[in-house]
Image 1 (tube, rainbow, N blue to C red):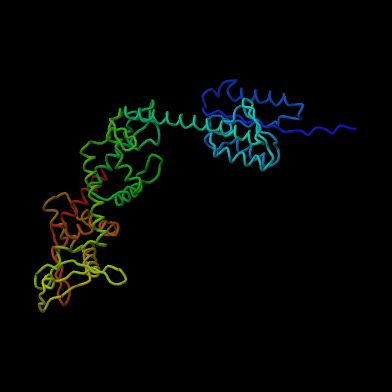
Image 2: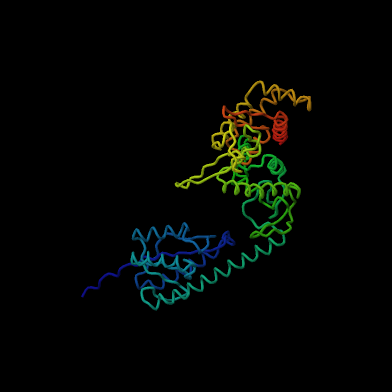
Length: 438
């Protein structure tokens, strides 16, 4: 009887090395793994085993991920029906994760591909082979996790000594010989930000101004509010090394002083509390303390909730709250409407030529170097950023510019503060000087 020809079994060798160390050598670990696998395939020649010509080598890549170029190419060839057996030196070369290995075995099974380890003889087609495989993989994963713990412990110990252990290099520093050194050009930006923030008081506004000035991060991106908060909370600039929320004395130089850091901390701690209080009231009472009735008595902010759970705010005559009902006064006014009316008056004031000239004359008495154009630009700068201000910042500007708002049955009477305008111009002018200096 004529003997049937032996079916060829196409064998692919997969090799991997976690680190790049030694890969430049003429004969490295990948070569040693492949040589052992090729010898094993040659020993099975009588079974029809043949080596496929393609190389599947991943050098310097961890076994904790499946995103490896050579492995992905191997899987693609398996799915294309080009491979019958995968041969490795040890199973942890293919994967160190039980979950990932289960995915690989599932792909092998769906395409009738078997798996062979040269140094760990077993067959994945039966239950005993799978049990042996899982036991070996458990030890491989344990080894990987222990190695990870050792690395984390080393990083923690180095951080406690104030050493730089890699990661994104903060703006203001460069890395030389594994140490942070000050980049003077970038350090000027950091000092400028820490100087300007206490004056501006808002990360949103400062980030917007820096974007207009084309100030960029280390990666060349414009500074946004999120980046600003990270920068202002980075204790690296104080010369400290931070690990998991704990700061240790660093070996690098500080860019800012403790005084600069403390000023920023004061603003950052205060603002959330005020915003929280404003949130509880929905909107702050912008005119509290400066709004009065026709009888000269202050009007009190209050609110009520209707059936639709919507909050309605009012300013109510104080005498009405005490049970009195005097004639000739406005009993209550909607807070939102009267606040909007006052704000419109104030914003119109900032654009008024008469007020600009009057403010310049008063400011010129205090500082002869200030020009009318500077006053005009300073007042006009306030108008476009009004909507960007936090509610408590809007309230501060109103308190600064408006001395008194009187509510009469016939309308409103608003008395402005000229000295408040001078103060506002001085603050804006000082901010502009710092911006130009930066």
